Length: 382
Image 1: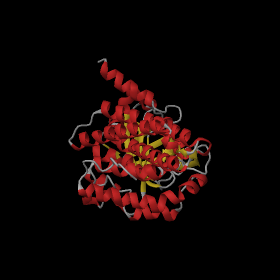
Image 2: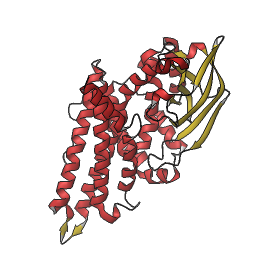
Image 3: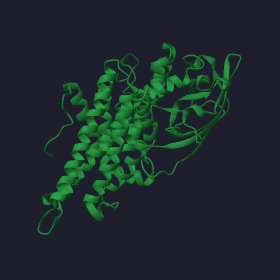
Image 4: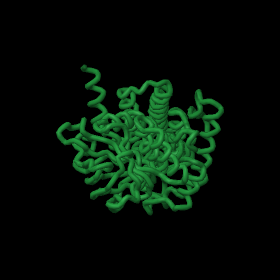
């Protein structure tokens, strides 16, 4: 490959990690991605290899056995994972969502407990979304009633990533209905707690290797010490969590764009029409150039978010802009990649149709792009 902007301004340590993940993805993910996608899951062997090298521990502090990566480094690595398979990036990155509420408001004891579980070779799940609410987090109907030194949790969560394989959950429930969003609280709940029922896997269009399920909680008893932060802080914790995780999450969409570009370059060099490779047709070359413009701009926007956060600046507007821009670009780039490959692009013989299916979810989850535009516009007109 020729020009490569993926290592610009990275330290030698970051580049070393980047190349390590790139090699893992090249050997373990890309050759098997089509079959994994078809089956809707990874093999346990592949997932275990990823766990063995600690890809689920990017956010866990080193003192608890994790990698302790800064935001920028995690963004770089999540892009490499997304290059191979977005579902892979989401599965391994799910611990970031599960852990971040604890990093924001958890006690030392809670962080240590959570870390011991995931460092031991497990993943976590972030249980916020409900079927009736979607991006309207404030419409949460799951309840948590305090009885003695326990909370009794009842309700149903939808579209929960890693729900069926996680060993520990971060769950958001209402402790005071009268207070609206100020009555929501956050809890850490072990997956083997009685009363938790797991639903069937969602049969999704894309990110099929990321397991997504519905979960129900029926009279689930949670020790009061598992309350994260204080009662009523759940909504704030959830929003602060998403502000911190959106950039790393959408960085996988940058990986999708880079993969699309590479596939188009390879194909357009091999495909000959009218006596010459199609990349020599300006219509095709300019389309790929526009894909590169979108990819590099999105990459730099997302990494800018990471650098801000590493300097203690958690700007929800910048996060919303990066999430929206990168995901919109990913959908357009993937669509154009299918167009460059023509009929073959529409066939499962080539990977770009999968990349197109995978890209779409980034406009939807962690707050739809319409919701992100509400955040951005509200701040502009304050």
